[in-house]
Length: 238
Image (cartoon, rainbow, N blue to C red; front, side, top):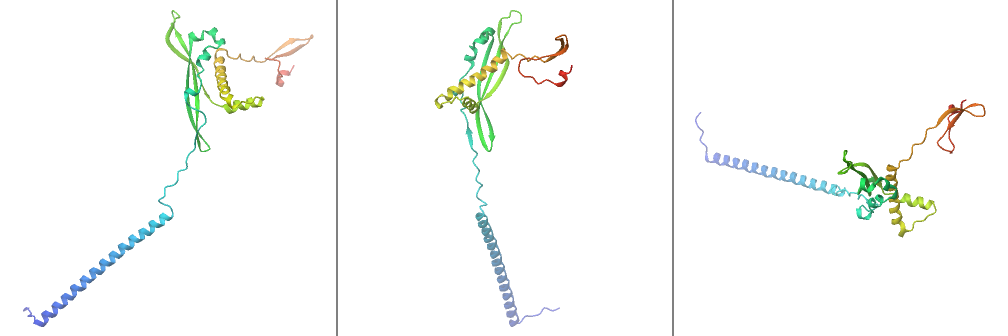
């Protein structure tokens, strides 16, 4: 097909048409860009509104941690509690066992923590141990070795001691309170130690046997004391 020759008017008209198309396309791109910017701005505004809503709801405010109350009921410092070891070693009742030659005592003040009704408590814990020196099996001479015989752990309970004293009609003055509690604690530990060397004798079991009383054969019940006894019915049968 032979190439068409453009007239000057046709060429000018085509140029105007192309220019208009370019301007329209450019305007469309600008409009789309404005719309995108508007959408972007809307999104930021929405985020800000939402963040402000969360601020009103105290979302960003960290929850207030409820303070846990901690109470140290009694001192946990070792120097505040008398060491009973030397006094115990001098107890007269222990001298027949050559206590100082054969035994040693070890004393330790620690602490115990526990939680009750949402409150953390700290109290002292007393540990005492009885150790015995070992002897040479041939010469029976004391060696440098020792072994633990017994140990016990005690906790402070002053309220109970004061209450019992009060029930007996003894009022503990505040100035006298520490001395009283120190002495009560010592006696408690002493009782533990004495029980090791002088254990309570086991109660004699009840026994029933037959004896002749007043020319009659009867069953005799022997008890461990004069206190009233609860006797089973089968033991009363003759």
